[in-house]
Length: 82
Image (cartoon, rainbow, N blue to C red; front, side, top):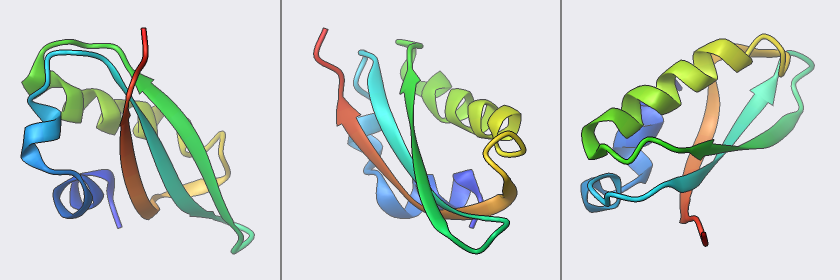
C-alpha cells in the first residue's frame, strides 16, 4: 500500500494533530520479498504538514531501502521524548 493509504488506515487523525515531533515506524516488503522496517522522525510541528513530510521522506528513501513506492505494510507512530 502507499504511504497515504497506510496513514489513513493506521494512525488516528488526533495523533497527526499534535503539535510536536514524533517518530514513525514504516514496515515494508523489500524487492527481495523480505519484510523490513525503518524509523523516520518527523520534525515539522505544523499538524497538517506531517503527513506530507512522511510521504516525501518515503518517496526519497524507498529506492535506497530497496522497496517499491507502494510496498508499505504498516505505519506506527510514537511520541518523541525530547
